[in-house]
Image 1: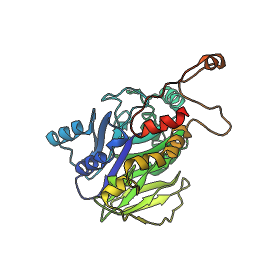
Image 2: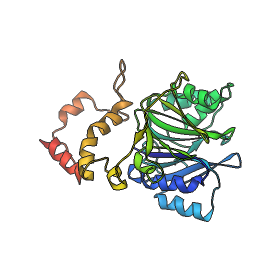
Image 3: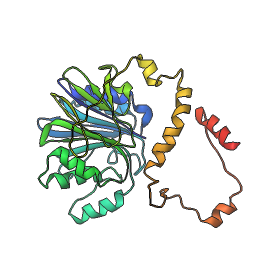
Image 4: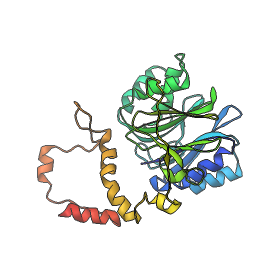
Length: 314
């Protein structure tokens, strides 16, 4: 689970991205990073460790720009490190991507892209995305069409935000089996993994469904299908205060986490269970004989997870 944010408007993107990430740090704190279009070039800053490391670095060495994307990471592929941190870019850093989710077929895509001359720096599944977008972008498509084509090749779960220096006035975003919302402000727009990330700036949001694409520009927001057709969607107006929003309308965080458990299981397994295919559980592989020899299961947990463990024990 990771957190992503994006901003386009008249204010300094770095400040708003860091603020949004601070509301999403519960989704991951192995590393944090931003990619901001500065003078029509993408400047990327990403650091291992808590968000404060990135925040202090940006204060000492600011990035000036009004459009950008950000990420706070919980490592799934590749150890926590600067190079494995998001955002990830293509080889010449003209396209940058933030991603929450798991790309199940990334090794096949990585091998294919390598055969096309692409090189990879990280151990992550995410790095295939900007290179895949780059491959289709070079095919004469605009950024939206390239993202649509690239995501059609992805298997697994994803919520992504994409920027490119050739189209420095837009962010493209899409989700599948990972949460993503769009915040609608005054002459500015946001994307985020969760509502609290934008609540200090707007209470009007779109709640995206699977395979809904978003084009954010300085002039507003367009929702589209993968076929490019416009989507008309009702604006959701948030009436909770900030504390209640972070609790998702529940009385306390424990109750929120309990009710989120079915979704957490569904999101975790979404990319691993596909109709007509064998179930893939990463590197967890036990033979029938090994399973039959297990005589004990240890459940280690605290807080809400402790109560889930007690249920599991029974």
